[in-house]
View 1 (cartoon, one colour):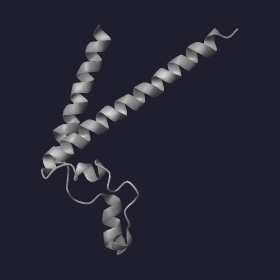
View 2 (tube, one colour):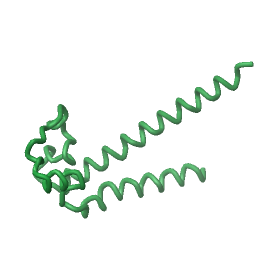
View 3 (cartoon, helix red, strand yellow):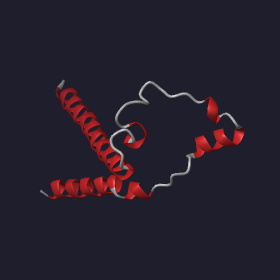
Length: 103
């Protein structure tokens, strides 16, 4: 019961950070973009194959509201990361049990 409560509190905190705190992230370009602009090769960049996907660029294609887009992208990213992590640990635990049973 205590582990479940800790998990739920951690999940709520992670979702709040992803959906609320992300709204205050800097709109300035990241380090790589900044250097590309400084060195003059930023305009030679091309989009990748998933550039038109729904969550590309913090979900800017979801709606006209940037805040909602960022919140949805943060929520989906957090839940997806949690699901992938859970799956990896579930497989590792299952593999560990199987290998420890072999004489």
